[in-house]
Image: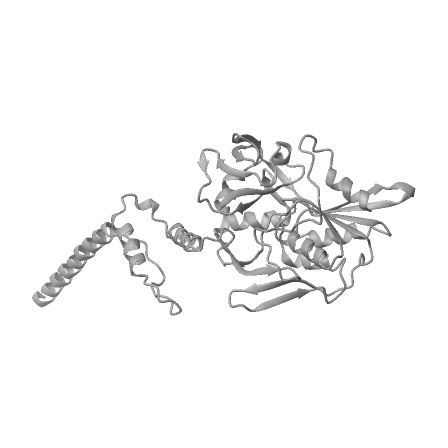
Amino acid sequence: MRKNFWILVLVVLAAYGGFLVGEQRLELEIRNWKVDVTTRQTPKSTAADFGLFWTVWDKLNEQYVDKSKLVPEKMVEGAISGLVSSLEDPYTVFLPPQQNKEAKDELGGAFEGVGIQLGFKDTRLAVVAPLEGTPAKRAGVKAGDLIVRIKDKSTQGMTLPEAVSLIRGPKGTQVELTLAREGASEPIKVNLTRDTILVKSVTVEFKDLPAGRQVAVLELNRFGDRTQEEWNEAVAKIKDEKVVLDLRNNPGGYLDGAVYMAGEFLPAGKIVVTQQYGDGTKESRRVDRNGRLIQTKLVVLINEGSASAAEILAGALQDYKRAVIVGVKSFGKGSVQQPEDFPDGAGLHVTIAKWLRPSGEWIDKAGIKPDIEIKMDDKDESNDLQLKKALEML
């Protein structure tokens, strides 16, 4: 019994001692609490030293006063955003889950905001195009306007996703933009009330000409998820009419859309665009179908809001002398972005190539120059001088 008694005492003391050690270890872990990561392994494909990164990571976790701010997901997203922005390419961006969803909603044709397509003039945030029938268009926002401030925040150094997240918001709420416009001596402030933006990609309207003839004005304002379906519905209504293809304020979208629409007017086999990659290799995208409007007389309208895929389409039609281009010089975006989606909903848009016209010209910043330059009537926007010229030519 005495032996069993001392064994019991030793077991209790050992258990209590273990409890005390565990308690001290727990207190120590709480004091030295830090965000853990899955791996700290440096990629084999780079010679970069990640030691400083992990030193800063550890210092923040050990010393930062507000532990609730140490959210691993946000810290990693911030690090990735900084990595991507170091390339100094405004079109290569990391999109956290919510921003990635917004980008997809926009190409889907429905979102809540003010109706502005954003881009960059050099490194300055700019309006590529205000969408028809939206708060931005009604307030007089114009393609080419530089956005200097969003609310009280300067746009200097701001990324495209940051700007989009500040401008967008629930229907009925307001956002103030400060704009710089060519020819204006003072900044312009506009207060916009957000709304649900429903964007139809394609519309067709028939204009009367003398001698009972008609012209089909085919307006293509984006290359999104529903564009091909809407395009086919619109083209099916065109019989033997001549066509005005209106690409004004079309900010682009999916490259496949531009190739498909080019196939409506160009013979099968023609190169629409060539992508030139970083290693110098090239890949050409060609017309792969027999279009319905190959013999139709065609005039194309462009302006400073025509960008990216819209410029690909206009440039191909101009190079093959398939259409006369009327309007003013286009925006000048000559790079191709490839979207990547990740399991958590985040995304990455990577500039993977330059796109070249069939002539071999790279139009980045240079834009598409019209065959016939016609400026709009700044005093009366209802007086569409560009469309009038196109109808006159047909």
